[in-house]
Image 1: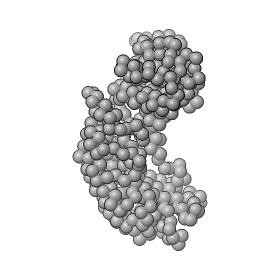
Image 2: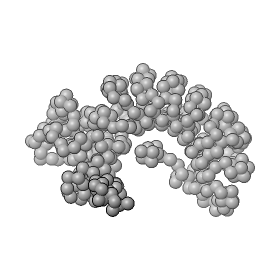
Image 3: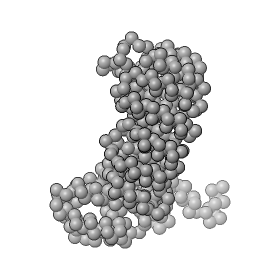
Image 4: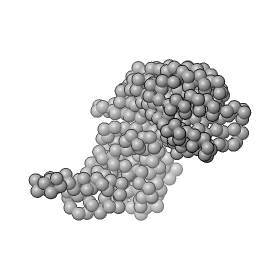
Length: 394
C-alpha cells in the first residue's frame, strides 16, 4: 500500500503521517522544518499547536511572533509600554501561527507572558518604559492574544481565567464568527455581573459541554446554563450552604441526558442528607466518572446507593471527611457496589482528624474487589484534574 501511494503521487500524505508520529517530539520537529518547504509546512502546525505547554523552553520568543498578529490598535497600546530597537510588531510572518493553536491553558498563557516580560526587562533590544506598569502590560498582552486565539481557533476552553471581566466578555460577544466555547471553569472569587455571564453562555450555546465553578453556583447562573447550554457533559460543583444543594440538584436533573462526568465537593456543610437522598434518583443510567467529596453519614450513603441501583459508574471516587471515626462505610460499599458490580474502577480516601487512609493500601480488601472484576485504584491516580481532563478531550 505504501509503495502504491508513493508511485501514485501521494508522497505528501505519507510524509505527513511520518511527521505526525513525532507530534510531541519538538526537537525532531524543529529538525523537520529545515529539510525543505514541504516538511516545513507539515511540521510547523504541530510545533505551534500548544507552545505554552512545552516544558522548560529555551525562551519565550513565540510571544513576540504572536504579537505581530495584533491589530494596529493593540500595537499602539503596546508601544506605550515597550521601547524596541527593531520592528517588534512587524506583521511579516511566514505562517499565520495563531491559526495553529489547538489547546489553550489560560494559566500557562499568563505564565509565559510573565516570563517573556522578564526577558524584555533585561534585553538590549527593547525594554519596558515603566517597570511599575509591567502588570498592566501583562494584562494587555494576555487579553489581546486571547481575542486573537478566539478568532482563529475552532474550539476553545476557558479555565479559571482571572481577566474575564465584563468589558472583556463584551469583546468576545462582539466577535462575528461562531464562538465554540467547549469548557468554562470559573474561580470561586470570580465576580461577574449576571448580564455578562448571560452574554457569555448565550454566545457559547450548546457548544458548551464542560462547566464548573469553585464556589456556589447561583440560582440565576443555573437557570442560564439550563436555558442556553443543554448539552453539558461535565459538571464540577462545590457546595458551601444548604441553598446551593437544591440549586445543584435541579441543574443535574435538567442536564442528566448528556451528563457523563460529575464532581460534587461539599466544602463544609457537613452531613448532607438532602444531597444524598435526592442525588441517586436523578443520576443517569451510566456515568463515566462520579467524584463525591463530602462527610458521609452511612445511612445517607445507603440511600444514595439504593436510589441509584440502575446506574453503572465506570469510575467512582469517594473522599470521606469523617467526623466520627467509628462510622464505617465499607460494609455499604461492599453490599451495594461490590456485590452488584456497579463500577469498574473504585477509589476511596478517608480523612479523620488528620489521618489519611486510602482503600488502595488495604490489600485484603483490594483482592476482595478483584474477585468481582472491580479495580481499586489509588485515589490521587484516579482523580481527574480539570487541566488533565481538558488535555485528554482535546
